[in-house]
Image (cartoon, rainbow, N blue to C red; front, side):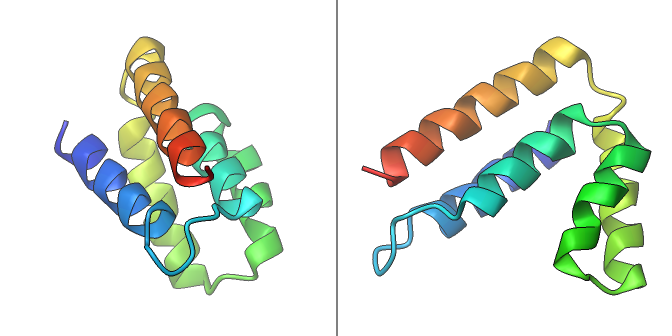
Length: 90
């Protein structure tokens, strides 16, 4: 639950910043990939960002934690994130 709240707050901060309220499509795609792709596929999707190995390892560790959540809970979080993106993109 704590991880979900942290992800939600980070998403709100990134998406709803007053100077630029348009959401980057890569961010939206990466957030949904984070919740629904398997770990090997998620690592492939992260490769496009050319992140350092330490960052990929850290993100994979968090992903393993969220993968333990039920699919229904992950779907609820994704639904909230989609609502935030829609609201921030208006």
